[in-house]
Structure formats: structure tokens, C-alpha cells
Image 1 (cartoon, rainbow, N blue to C red):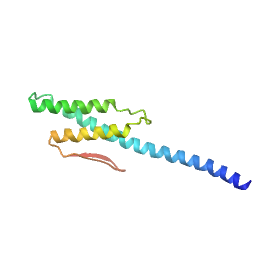
Image 2: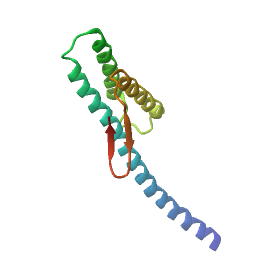
Image 3: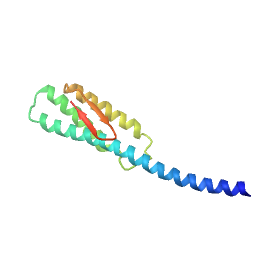
Image 4: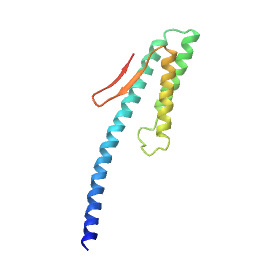
Length: 121
């Protein structure tokens, strides 16, 4: 009887603690992902505006790559944490961001830390 009661109390306490820990973990990693994607979007929109003034062939390729990155970010399922290709799509966005940086001759280094997020050039 004591074994059964102890098991039930432990199960209830563990479930409660697990839910709280899961929420903290999800909030932390969701915020990091949001910060990273937001930084990519701001970067892409800024460069898109800067490059629209020049209309040569090199810039049109860069603008197409930026449009592709912006489109990928806009289609990203922010509000569906159960989306099964979330990590896969995030990796595609990161790859496109690196491609755009390469086309713009920019050294990118996105770091998400506990203190702050930064994109350095």
C-alpha cells in the first residue's frame, strides 16, 4: 500500500516538475529561434532596400536570393511547434542566409547567447 501511494505521489510531483521544466525549455529555445530568424529577416529586408537602387545583373541575382530568403522566413510556421519539418526548414533558412552573405561578400557570424544575440560583420 505504501509503495503504491509513494509511487502515485512521485508520479504526480514528477509530472508537475516536468511540465514546468518543459515550459522553461520551450520558452528559452523558442525565443532563441525567434531572435535568430528575426535577425535574418531584418538583415534581408535592409539589404533588399539597399540593393534596389542599383539595377545591374549582379545585384539582380542578389535581390533574387534575398527575395527567396524573405519568402522562406515568411512561410516559416512560427505558431506551430508540432510542425514536423521545423528543424529542417530552419536549416534551409540558415543555408540560404549563408548563401546570401557569400554573395554580398559579408562574413556572417550569428551567435545566440544567454546575455544577448548578435550578428557581426
